[in-house]
Image (cartoon, rainbow, N blue to C red):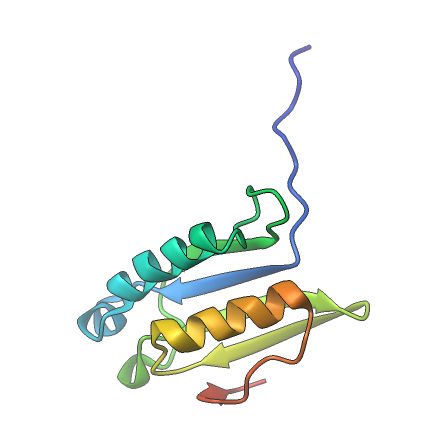
Length: 113
């Protein structure tokens, strides 16, 4: 039997909306820029020491306030989620670094749970 796919340990998952309303507000550029940040800062799950996954998402429900990003992580044994509106690359990087470092997530532009 051939070996299965390699498993990567992760600390969190970031999703960036790619629906038409968010794309009109720059979410496609945000996604690419955030991907470059995760690569450069070695935060991507497949880099040595990295721990984060990044995924394009469908509508996250805040169409008039895009780009919208949501993140999920397990912290202190519990699932934590945070939703962000009008995200720029600086905020996305701050969120990603906090997730990786397992510190408090930024409050700026956060909404929902």
